[in-house]
Image 1 (cartoon, rainbow, N blue to C red):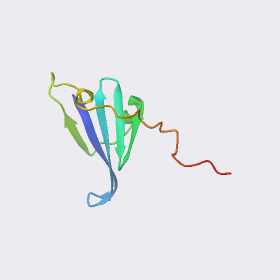
Image 2: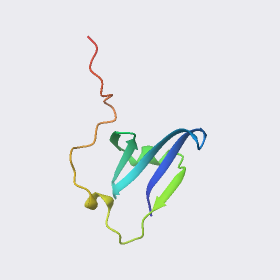
Image 3: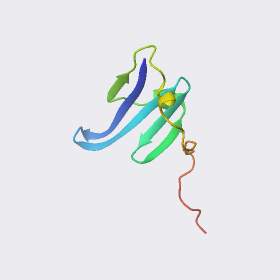
Image 4: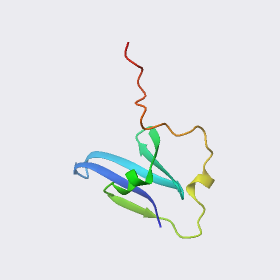
Length: 85
């Protein structure tokens, strides 16, 4: 089962930007873009073009069981900037 993948944006592997998508449980995907982590819908994940695919053996615990939840995912619709006055 595919549990994670890396997406590359750019013209060459040595030039561009890498983003990681992680499936932490059957119904939860996270997008890791530098220091920003957001929850993403599976539909958005499936529309990506993967550069590197990572698989997990069946029977291995989900990633979410190995991490301690510190805060909820940032809402991708929120830009993180202050409103303009």
